[in-house]
Length: 82
Image (cartoon, rainbow, N blue to C red; front, side):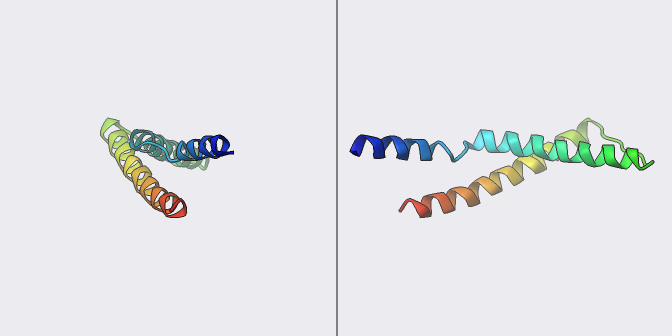
């Protein structure tokens, strides 16, 4: 029984993403959200423009949001395991 509990705890600990993973997923998610909104704007007859500095800024903003969400999630995760 102890062994099963230890395996379950190890599986639960893997649910908190690493900082690198959270930053990358947040950055990619922010870029994808912008692209989706840009495609929607173009379908409605508008225009959209994105250059390299804009991509970098969007990725950094999304990465920061990803780290913030990870921080909140980790606080709740740690509090639930005390």
